[in-house]
Image (spheres, rainbow, N blue to C red):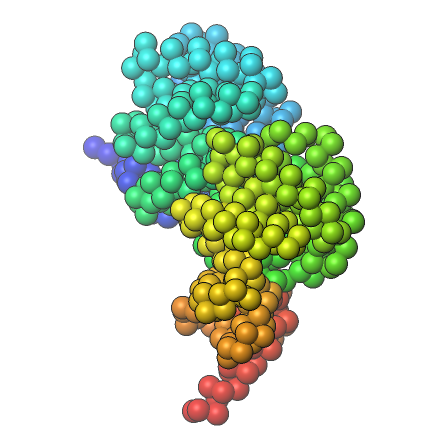
Amino acid sequence: MPTELDTLVAAGKRALEAGDWSAARGCFRAALDLRETPEALLGFGDALWWLGQTREAITHRERAFAAFLQQADPVQAAIAALWLCVDYRQQIGNTAASAGWVARLARLVEDFELDPMRGWLLVIKASDSDDPVAGEAWARQAHEFARTAGDLDLEFCAASQVGALLVRQGRLSEGVTWLDESMAGSLSGEGAAPDTVVWTSCNMIVACTLGADFERAVQWVRAADTFTRRYGCPFLFTECRTFYGAVLVAMGDWRQAETELHTAIELSHDAFPVQHRQALATLAELRVAQGRVEEAERLVAGLEDHEAATPVWARIHLLRGAPTLAAATVRRRLALIGEERLESAVLLELLGEAEIAQDQHQSAAERGRKLVDLGETCRVAAARGQRLQGRALAAGGHVAQAGAHLDAALSAFVRLEMPLESARTRLLCARVLAEQEPEVAVAQMQLALTAFEDLGAGRDADDAAAFLRQLGVKAARVGPRGVEVLTKREREVLSLLAEGLSNPEIAARLYLSRKTVEHHVAHVLAKLGVRNRAEAAAEAVRRLGSESAAK
């Protein structure tokens, strides 16, 4: 007859299969309170991992590994070791610890002849490899092993690893074929494990970002909606969470982008310097888009020589009226990576903008033409090139020609579902049309203003409203549209912000985790349309005072 411990562990496993991570955590926690077993330790670690409590998850997986070995269960010990390889590499960025667990896994596979695990060991070696050619060979071996063994989860993970490594080699069209197949298979439910979607999604979004294939990334993010509703966000590894945040920024989902980027910053703090810098730089780019330039500068202070921060520093220099400094910043980076790579597209457009500000219109137009050529396989790069050509031609007085290029850029950005870039291009179109077709210019600028307001792009909205007023149209700023009322919990957090409490103090007062409080604070700032905790506190005083007066 099953004991209470058996019942709790079985219930926890069912909750994991259903994607009810909180319920699983509760079942395994209760089981561990009765007695510490390897099954309960591993299940508890799995639940914590899905809930974003990475370090605690690692601790319990390590204890589970040791306990399984003590019980002479090398298969389950190997499964724990497999995830520890991934955790230390993808989440913590500790390559030495990851290598140690790879070696431990390899030892178990050899000593106990764990043939079903050989394919997974090959996938991990491929993922860890700094040589994309050698990594590709291991991933292909894993893929063949999976097909022979009939292991669909291994097959999809191996296929996505092949695709990611092909992209790293510059073989984009070949690589995305593997990535697309792995995403389709894992999201269809052919495999048994939701972890497979995490692996394939991470490879997909990182590879698409490196290959500047934004459109494909957006399409797969939308295709994963059903999975996300059931299991939660699949972009759980630190690197892919950062890139997912960048995609959300481009898609206009800035509130969710805030959450993902803050989480990536927290996960990578003091553990994964490269990804920490990338997450900070991406959040800084969002701050620039919101018009919060001073905050952006604080986020990337000290990162002036790091590649992740190059675009945001160049943009800040342009906004500060220092195009020479912006151009120098971009040129340093381009000298290292070259101008022929798709990831150079945003830098090339920034350099073109700096050249226009220095009256180098012809040079900027030529740069735009090269960008269009570079974008034969990438619609985002082509759209940037068309916009840069239009901007340069307009600055040089060639208004009619400029309009055609800007129209092409606008159409591309709209199709790509990039609302900020679409609105910024509309603003440029309106400026070009202002003298010849003022009514059309007003219509375009009003559309741009509405988009900026909806997004919360304050600086751009101010520019659009000011230009409309120059055209004789009343255009008062109204703030972000569709801002929801604060939830009860968010009102509690806001009131404590007004008292000047820090996040740890708020967490203690409300009996919440620090991470949860950070999410609530980010949501409060976004909903109120304020830039920092001080402005939120001032808004809280105003709101709470109004509520008291009403009573």
